[in-house]
Length: 514
Image 1 (cartoon, rainbow, N blue to C red):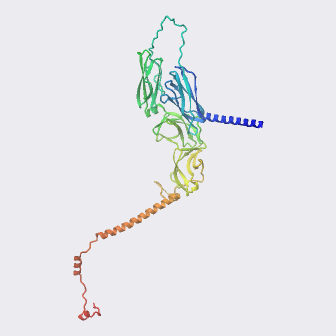
Image 2: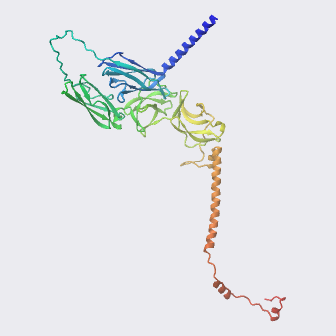
Image 3: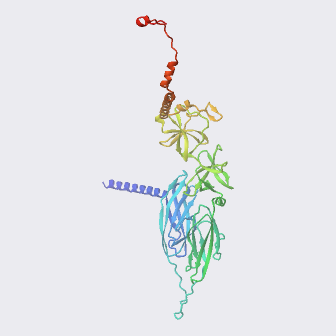
């Protein structure tokens, strides 16, 4: 009994350890974490916060927001951009790695504590779909700066005199995005910076060189398209010494933004960036990494073995999302590629030939697949209504494939083909109602017959009404004869007079002879 109890306890412990390890691995596989460069910073120190992202698959894009107490910490630099007061945004493109680290440097402003939290973290994997990660938070406590006592104690007979500082310089100035021109210096008071059109607001941070000096004019500022001017005023501790720093910020137009960044493109009125480096990206079958030049810059593209498709990987700024686009050179625009991915194979929906005849037993329809609407062919048999025949480019060649809409599986359909129309004109396909009617399903055929019967019935009713209307018009406009006219006709008419004797007239049995 005792041995049995020990065995049961050992088995239970093993199961708990295995389950605990599994849970730890599952949680660690899709989460974020925070680490500080120092656990006890003082006022005026710089602290580096490291954000680490862990994913169960390779990441090609990562986004997260980091919030903090702006009264305790001041954003200085790092792998982030200002996104408002007390908030920065991380948008990076990891090289298809399962872990990625991003460092953000803050300067401590005053004693106190600030909770640093990672919110809304998400990544885009090799499947090009957004996957959320679990957020995290940690508290950072800033201590007061301590002064080192003088090695020589002051004589009690000598009164201490306090002289207020006249230092009205800044030790740091930034807006979170863009680079100041010229580079910052406490003695330089005028700066310029250009930001892209997508930047609608900036967060001006200005740090005084003396901690007793006061600063006004910093904080979050909205930007209008074009030139914006901001004044940052510094007043020294003595209250009389003042200095003004001028910050000229130009928010570029869409056209100027494209000139600022050769990899920037405008698609449907929104900012997108071309991913210039595809190293580490999962390459679909039938494609290889190649080089292409756009807007004077060389970028990586995916090129099909047939040479028919050249795919750009582009990330949308607002979102973000990453997907494949095709560049239409004659229109100078990027078009979102319409495709689906099944079992790591890319199926690109290709154009059908212009003139074709649908095989008997099938009808043409349209359905939403991938990133748009696709022409498809369905069987008239009810048992096959869940299958679509689609025309795709896959594995280096084009052909027909049968898509099972229930379990999202796809396979080649060599038994299906479109024959070229025999009756074609210069304008295109000849209208052949018999062929079209044969390709209808049963419901469409019933509807056509019903509509045809109604049209014939309406034609018959129109003919009957037209005939009756004509007769009524004739009767309405006929001129009837008056009594006087009838009398004139009777008087003027000549009738033959029979030759009858008196005896014959009196004898009713003998009829008159003509």
